[in-house]
Image (cartoon, rainbow, N blue to C red; front, side, top):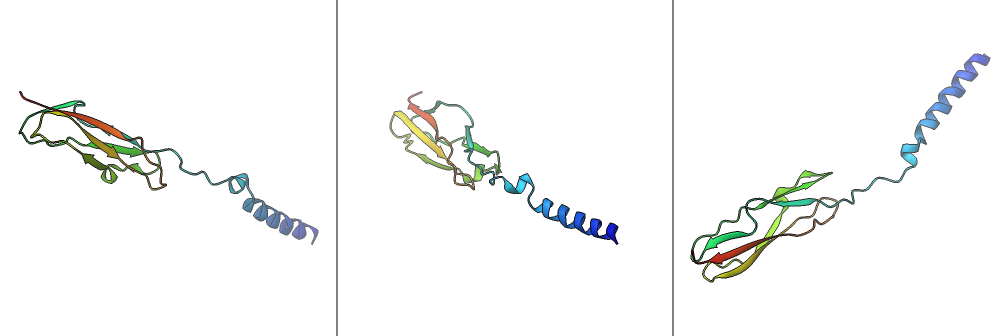
Length: 112
């Protein structure tokens, strides 16, 4: 009978101990690392005046979410009708709300 009490006590003790292990006592590890944007293609990019400009784009990777390239937003003021220096700005935010450092491509419109 005494052995049965010890077994019951050990069962209850290990069950309770399993519920309060250090992993459950730690704060939840939050993803606070921002994603990284990598510009693809040349930077700066040179294009001939009055030609079509097709932006080569960028990729984005987050250590928790993985490849989040499809979430990138790009804004551009490139105008190939006028010579000058323009910019394409790339931004992305991961699922935890961490924003990447904005990546910027410089586009030079010149007469070739």
